[in-house]
Length: 281
Ligand code: KMH
Ligand code: ZN
Image 1 (cartoon, rainbow, N blue to C red):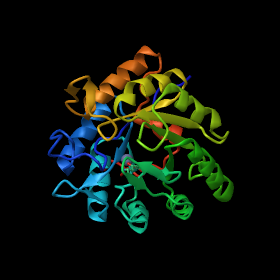
Image 2 (image 1 turned 90 degrees about the horizontal axis):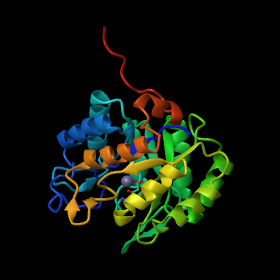
Image 3 (image 1 turned 90 degrees about the vertical axis):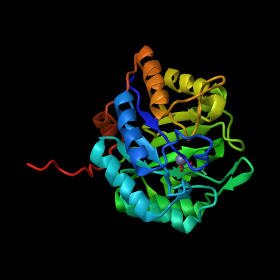
């Protein structure tokens, strides 16, 4: 069994800065979070951007600035969300790849998302997948429900393997409308994954956070943590920041004899293209 890829999803598109002042929403806060989380054991960062009013944005200027700043200050694999917020139009979600990330999320189907709908019709998934192949960006297949596994199968059948040839899946459990954050749901999805899958991680939203983390570690999966998915460290105690969640995940991983992967190991695991600037002599 290998070490553990720890992804941090520090911000998301759903929480309000006013309710969670420690949520990293400015570029400076994002960079500081990225640096702290890398030191704590993360090797991949899943980014959503916020504008000057701390509202979710897919504006290319914000996306590019964040990709460049995180790449400049850390060795983390930089993944941009193409999910955005439930209010973002599909056409704008496709423009995310213009910011030249190492990786992008690719959700494998429409799902109810609380009172909203997170829209991912087949045509959008298919266009995004082919665009990622053309731009040499490694997709992370986001599975919110069991049926999404079959949509991923359909993408692979129709378009072949992603750039780099590795197939990395993230099971997002506990969204109201998706599969529950239980060991049983995680294992049902894992057992349904096609043979092309080379690695998988899992996250549990809210109180599913720890049970899903423990299940993934025990079953040979990798971890995703962060304030996008969970803001509670314990009952009645909110997290001080993202690094605290990464540090706890790293401790669990160490205890399970699957220590955190370095950024270089994660780059190899996912076969991302190296877009970092060569150091000047
Ligand atoms: N914010 C959610 C509607 C992704 O990043 O690709 C979608 C999401 C998934 O967070
Ligand atoms: Zn996201």
